[in-house]
Length: 623
Image (cartoon, rainbow, N blue to C red):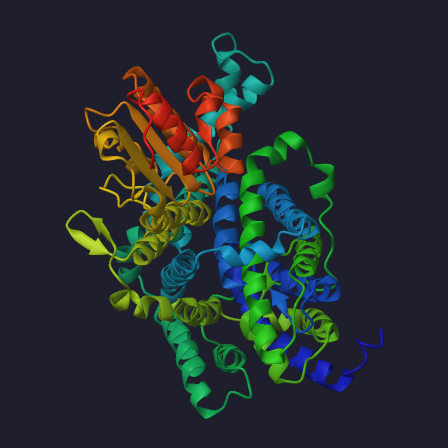
């Protein structure tokens, strides 16, 4: 408590300022997600308060962010589509995914996995963040033009046939659920079909049209129609918002330019009675928990969404901890990553119960809080309370905000969130991998793959594929470097010091191989060339392993294959200086003693030489 009250004035000012900055973004992200402005506002209120209270970064301000909203938008659209386009019907499943995401974040923190988030490769993060920017930019084109596919009746009419087909399929599914056989009760099916109205068909057609025009590909598909049906008032409102956001920053940064744009453009639009499209109405009063998450909960219903929720939780963890690092650099403090994940998880879980969209630590809001004087957790809690006050006091006023204004705000967010540092570095990075006729940097390739797949396919899967590619390329690079240093190569080798006086008469009979460094997946192909190095006259192979500290499973089986081939050719193999870990591995699969008798293991080359003198050509010779 003493720590909470140590900086009341600074925390109050920082929290209030951050809350005001968060308002336009919370409303915009809520609209963008598909659940409406209230969902963004609820998410900002509960996440900001509880993540600050239970988290591990004193100055962090949390709430809906661009990456979390972009992924949430895809999840929401998918679940709504699976529920016949009915948002109310889909809402419990959507909020359950958000709740699971929060619980997974708590689990990540409890298991102490927060410290491993920093190992996400930069090209993956860069490609993902740039894709988020591209997605936001493209998907906000239609609302900026004032074009809404559901209201374009000519476009909607194209889907009436499909709508009728879907409605009939739903009737058949309904009858199947009731145990009614269509062939035996055809009249019942006809009777139900007769109750289908034109309004039902129109409603389903609008849902199909909206789904077809959703996302990046959908926006690109309907863009020609949108350009022919521009609502000039909406476009002017969006462009004015963008102009003020960038222009006001040149005057002063003391007042958030997004807030100025929101107030000025909305005020002008409302004051002059312009014919614009307002955002959805924000419910007045305190947020009410959605108990359908609990009453409708079943393991079967959530199973399809477990991986989605886990992916969302990991994204939130990365987003939050990156912001925590920024806060550390500004305040010269050290955050607690696992505690921060627990706080974020608690905040997102509670937010889901009240119908809020998930979020994470927000970099801009956190920076604003620190610059305004925030130093303790109290600042984040005050930011949440400030947003709650705005909801209760100004909810009806906020409902008059033009949708085009929020689209303009989101366009500037999309431009700002892209990773320009990574994009600028593309020409200067070393080109080390060939893709067809083009030679690229492996880092650039990873970034472009993640960027392309995230933009045009699936954000969550794109990150997973990016991580796999990055891991494989990293292993290859490390393998190449280690193999180069380990010198497990099919080359003519120089004699070691204790081999210099090796008898000339035995050189054609005994082949000596040195392994310097680990025998692992990166060097196995070179080791397997060993048989090709052996002269036809050799009857004995000495493998010196005193400098081979480690052998993985790939190296173990490569060794086994080589030894099997040598044994078939009647060649005796002697191992010198075998260390503990490789010996343990070879004993586990019985290479020792099945392929290498224990009497063929020698601690040093001198004792090995004694065996050679006694057994090769059957003659003794002093060395």
